[in-house]
Amino acid sequence: MLTYEFMRRALFAALGISVIAPMLGVFLVIRRQSLMADTLSHVSLAGVALGFFLNLDPSLTTLLVVIVAAVVLEYLRMVYKTYSEVSTAILMSGGLALALVLMNLNGGTSSTSIQQYLFGSIVTISWSQVYLLVGLLFLILILFLLFRRPMYVLTFDESTAFVDGLPIVWMSILFNVITGVAIAVMIPIAGALLVSAIMILPAAIGMRIGRSFNAVILLSMMIGVIGMVSGLYSSFYLETPPGASITLIFIAMFLVVGLGKSLYIRMRKARQKGNLS
Image 1 (tube, one colour):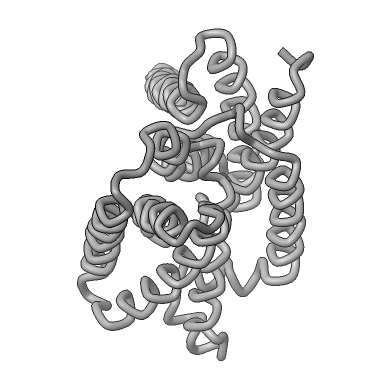
Image 2 (cartoon, one colour):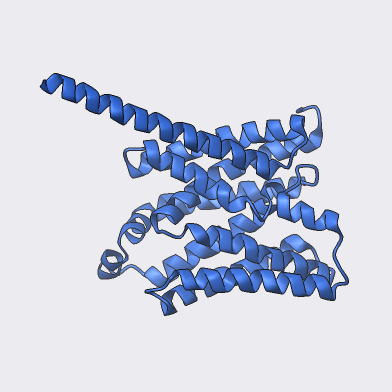
């Protein structure tokens, strides 16, 4: 597989995504914002359609649209504090509606171009996209090391973060923007419809087996590497969409871990009951 240059580019991109996506996904899951990733990925379709409509690079327009959507999402979340899911519903439906209108005004975008962004394509990944992923990876790692404690407090208890004097609004906006940028960069390989699953599933698996916050993040990244690489290999040999293959592997891993943990808990309870008797 690695004799092909496009597969080497895809492998480097997959390794970068396998670290970026789970790290952001853990914060999204704990903050109960799992749908935010799905919302921004759907809004990205409007950015793709805008790029085709204006005859510009879709990656650039997607990046700009997703950043704006990330800021608007935080504003709507503040307006509807009690009903936070309203903001995701508004942006998700609005993004899809705008994408359909722009595609229609453009006279119908080619199905090949749309499928590339909907389901991902390992053939069209360029070295510039790989370098962008690497740069984003280092940026996220630096921000994580610098703001790990403030983000930890903000993630688990916004009231405590406010009392501590943390700029919770700006921190939330910055986190949303970084998540949006990561989604925009990951779409060419993962696809807009499945990129949210690649962010959330490794985090959900890591939370099932991790005993501390740092352990959950490390386990999620390890699971991300295993799922991304194995999904990429299966996509190449089975000639299936990479995003779909990676997602199915993550789901299989989630089921295996869930069943394994349930079995372990039952065995431990039975053992404790036997010792008491």
